Image 1: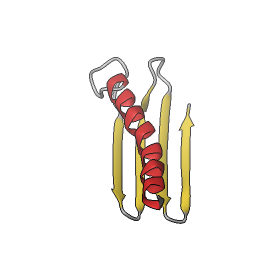
Image 2: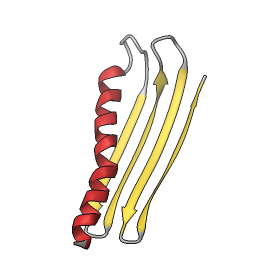
Image 3: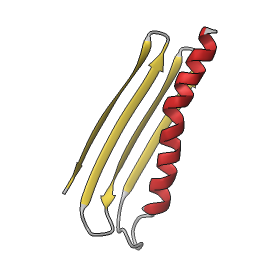
Image 4: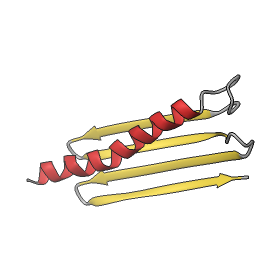
Length: 89
């Protein structure tokens, strides 16, 4: 039962980031596109001891404002937590 709870917790943390990363990738394609230059990186991992996901995105919105977002989420046998930092102009 405990392993199932771990897998559910990891899935709950990783799934939104994967979906969100796909949204950022499709809305922000880099140099030469409507939104201009940008950067995106995501890392996901899972094991029997828990899971972790981390992502960083930066670039410009369609109206020319700069943004930066970095987020880290972890889940393990003793609990779960996360941290998000972002800014925009």
